Structure formats: structure tokens, C-alpha cells
Image (cartoon, rainbow, N blue to C red; front, side):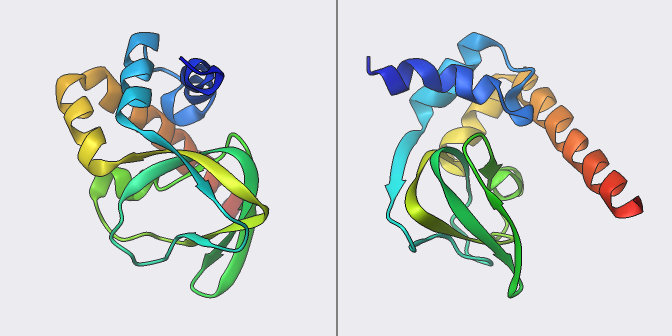
Length: 143
């Protein structure tokens, strides 16, 4: 097992989306996904595209654009695609690899859905993580 494969479960546990997920289940998520290297300047996810799936940033950075407007960039520990992972809808933003490229852990909706079916606790973990994000966004809008 490579160093990266050993550290991926703890990396996933460190993000709010999977913070309440049991360690054994984190390993199943890692086993169902893959690591992707994207060169600088290449689009990782295009707004509106149907390539549903979650990506967690391991190294590098990326620029984010929604409807032609730049949004805050993403760094290691950030993730994107959680909405399309769950609902299968189109991407809500365009993500482009930053100047040093981007390394992500990715899991497709096709590989993730069976995990949710087998492990209801994963669905609860995701709901808690998504609720935390909604609350944070609402708090930010009201300030």
C-alpha cells in the first residue's frame, strides 16, 4: 500500500462531509475512488456538465467560476462536486487547475451510490456535512 493510500482515509475524515464517517467505511470510499492528476490550466469540472462525482483536493489549487464570475479558489482539504455526487445533476461551477496543477481524490456517483445503499450511516454523515455548509453559507449572507 502506498503512502497516499494510507493517508487518504485520514484526509477524508478531516473534511466536514465525512467527519462523522466510521474509519472502516472511509477505507471503502478510498477503495471505490481514484487519484487524479490534472495539469495547470486544464478544466477539471465544467459548469452544467453531467460528470457527477466528488473530488477532494490533495495537492495544488484550482480556480472556481460560476456563471462567468470568479469565486474563491480551492486548496488542499477543500472539495467540490458533492452536490452532483448526491443528486446526479449538472456541475454548479467550473473548476480549473491552478498554476501548479491539481491532485485530487475522486469518486464517481456510480461508485458512491452503492456505498450509500449499503451504509445508511454514510448518508447521515453526508447530510450533517451538507447542513453545516448550508448554515455557514446562510450566516455569511446575513452578515
